[in-house]
Amino acid sequence: MTRYISDTLRQQVEDRASNICEYCLIPIEETYFGGEIDHIVGIKHKGETVLENLALSCQPCNRHKGSDLGSNSAITNILTRFYNPRIDIWTEHFQVNEDAEIVPHTEIGEVTVRIFKFNEFERVLERQGLIELGFWRVR
Image (tube, rainbow, N blue to C red; front, side, top):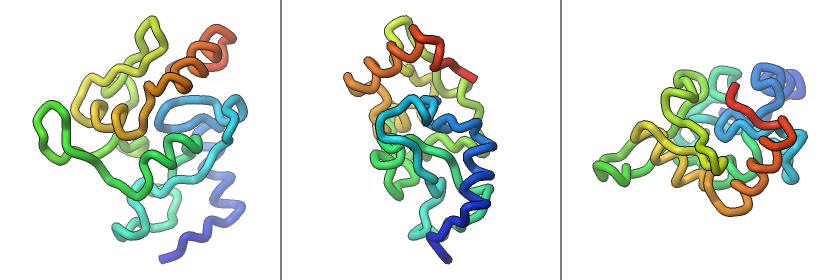
């Protein structure tokens, strides 16, 4: 298995995501730290470097996720996987409230919001500004 992502594969991931973080939906060109290619299932968990296992991620989402696959749910304390942009629909797991916080609807949403730190103060402020400017929306 390899970590190497070719320029062609990187471009395919970015194009498929419309250059938007597939986890928190921030436009990559509007975020200070830019975007990274994430292995949804990390290499150490036998995830492959193929289009189906790659997602475009903003730097904060990718750093908070790391190679983790999930976490214990705060609701049931049962190990629950993270949101997977290849198999899940964003609006089934999350919504955005009037304060620009991402609110989970499911246990998958809860562990993802908490571990990826979607609602850290600075991230919410950034999202509020982008919403006001019309640059952030649920797709």
